[in-house]
Image (tube, rainbow, N blue to C red; front, side, top):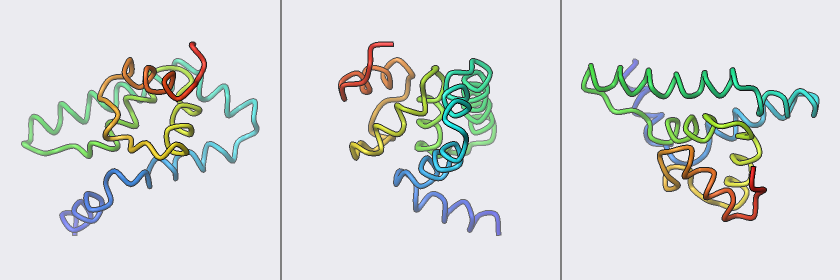
Length: 117
């Protein structure tokens, strides 16, 4: 059962489905709360820690991480992530093709005309 679920998830990797779902949930929040969530260092730290934990676990067990989820977490590892993810999806930029580092995510966002924060 677990392997079939992993395969089903892998088949949809890179389509932005998980990112859209997560953003839809965040979008239900009051606008002030939504902005605070995106700017909160604690959320940023959790996203970074999850990416590091999953990478370490995969390496220890010979597994492969879903690159789209890891890339979403990389974008989320710097404040202001909600707007960057939203802009990237709306522009049709596939998250996995962006980069694997938050610095690159910020550069891609600025290239889209995002602010210089």
